[in-house]
Image 1 (cartoon, rainbow, N blue to C red):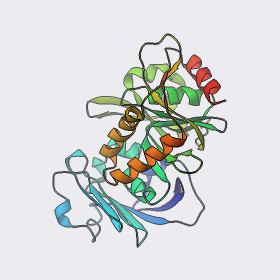
Image 2 (image 1 turned 60 degrees about the vertical axis):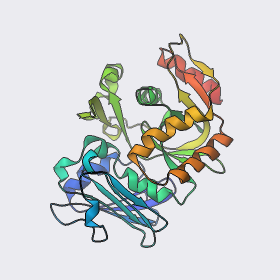
Image 3 (image 1 turned 120 degrees about the horizontal axis):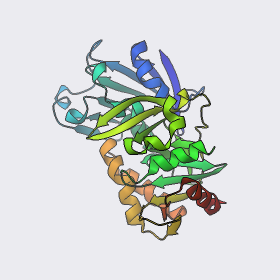
Image 4 (image 1 turned 180 degrees about the vertical axis):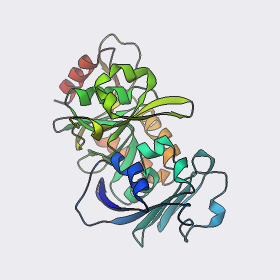
Length: 312
């Protein structure tokens, strides 16, 4: 099976070795495309073949290993997840491989091929950022924050209120020129303690996962009776979510260093490599969209009203 998707400015022709692999991954991908492909990405498992021949067998041991240079990228997640991601820039080819399809972790099915996508974006003005993205009309907002800051819950509240949704976990961001956000995935990973706040999203639940000691409700947003608008937008604001117990939504000054820390920590873990390139893109983005801290307070409707007024 084949599927073409847009990853920011890059179009990827995905080629699945089996219908089963396609069923695992295809529903999570956000933007279908009819543009000519920039890359071909082969998706396979050890049940039907060996790893791509170009990969050094020594890479496939128990620890995470990666290499990244001007010619390509290779990441073996090792003990974190038995998955291999490669990108060959001159050949415009990429690969995803796992020894057994049954071992694909839940977070990989929810945000598939992220390291390869990040590598493909590396030569462009775009970058995949650990953040949520929402938009009120044509005014996009990037919600940055550490784990459990509330990015997903606020993004899903915006989705339920009719806002455009660009992601709750990783979002593609154009850092140069006119900044913009674009979706990578049509999924959301909702913490168990927040699941009761969104009963209308229960039909989108694909499974309950238990990664790294955290229980998450994995949502497939296209499964909803009325699928939401999963699209990008010009970027109007970068906000660092900080819940400090404010009784109502509050904006406050924040340092670039605090925002960079929140943007970089999970991104580096999920997509190691090209750190210097990513940092330069982050800095350019914050230079044209100076960030603020945002405490949304206890009420989603009030938080969304404050955000709408902020970017108006």
